[in-house]
Length: 198
Image 1 (spheres, rainbow, N blue to C red):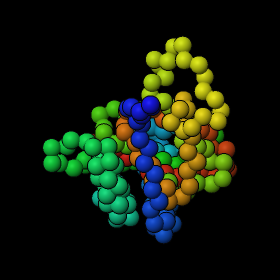
Image 2 (cartoon, one colour):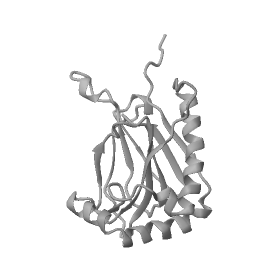
Image 3 (tube, helix red, strand yellow):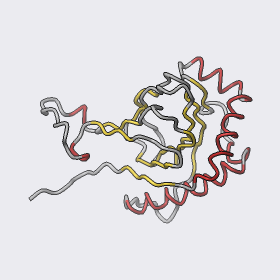
């Protein structure tokens, strides 16, 4: 008899896409105005723009982002319930939220989000061939003699799982889960909003 131990959870939901036009304009406006964010992106080899290291008040700057965060918070609460987090009666709260405008050929190297419990991304604009998000099995470093997995392996048995984003898609995962974004092969930028809850 098999039991599944230590599952790695990926939560996927669709949010109302009607506000994406306004979100797209807001994100592009931030990218145009935020000199510190553009400078940080350039200095760190980020192919495009991110407000990650420059703006920490986006929910107060734009009501459309505040509205999006309220929707995200409901899904984060559901994620926490399903994961059976013992939060001692409190709720996970937004720690940080940032805009990503990834230009052609831009990638996001594999990384984790330290000091957070749940992380995620909401996709605003995703042109064709804009690059998948790729999640890694967190046990990879300990699989010294493990044989490779079959190409047809079920998702839970794979070493890497890719998700093709689309506009309106919300993804949530525990912040320790290593992930990266493949190159944007589209001539148009991919726009997303990422966040951490702690």
